[in-house]
Length: 412
Image 1 (cartoon, helix red, strand yellow):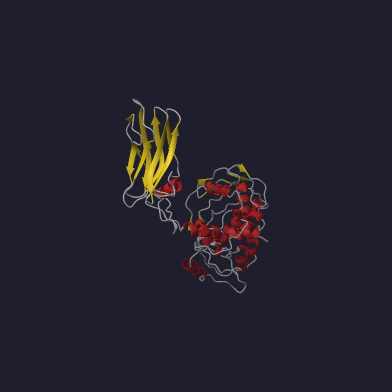
Image 2: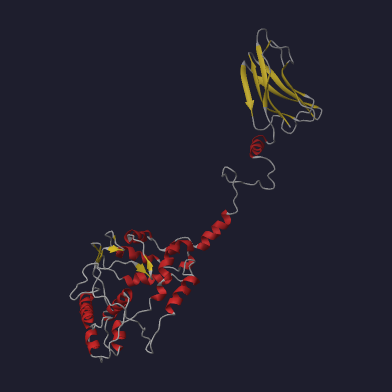
């Protein structure tokens, strides 16, 4: 039995005037549609939201990305990422406040009239006809397109089931103040013994639905959610971001892992140029440059060449080059240079522990010899402080023959 038939079956008492707000009527009609066709599937083409045209896109591919919600969000980092969801979650508590015009209105014991005393049967007849037309046009509807783009067949129930993984308290959830505000409104609702919502009919509009009117393609423009006005925006671009969920969240680093890494990186320190500061170990009491010298020469020593000038036909035992060791220091010989225009023998001479020391170098012919090593020639027997290190020729030089000698010397 339709609404018109139900209302006509009531007794007609004296004229009683009721008024209904347009928003209340819309709510009644929408719930009546849901009541009349509870298993509706939409096959319409959604073209706009809040007056903004949608970009043609296959949302099935986007929603399929919800399969990547394969683990509880409580194990992921961090909660600030979910702040954008807060507004959408805040209004969900009102979803159960459904009003059925089919169940509520027939219980009325009178025939309603408007404030002018006119019977509302004409309005109700149009409403009944419109609801019948709506039901006929939306039964078994299947959503096939979005802004003209065909959708891929897919069971979205499996995708939405992944929302069960939203199992943790988000910092962006509705606050107590928000829920208290909702409760303050729901506390104003009144129900009868059968838990049907009591309503007051006001200003029933005559042009909400017209007899024989078809819904057509995409007739609705979503303007509010939970009573909050929506900002005009093309959601297709936002939903397309779901394509970035290209891997399961469980394959990404968890908050525990990242916190462990952070606890270690927090221990690092940097200088003013953002260079990593490294503290010397307790047993490293020298700089790296000194360490390099120690590794090369075995001691923290600075070397330099002591040059001797050219000498022509030197007498036997002539000091071709000489270096006096600084008092309180020990002298080390790390190399030498000898050049002679004829064969001769040469000696490197020094005193260690008051004992004379020497090393002989033999030239079997004229020539030049340069020797350098990381280990001192007098390693283990350094020259005494205050003594001299010399290079001498053993035999006298021939007339016109040039000799020259140099020392690579250091002391500590």
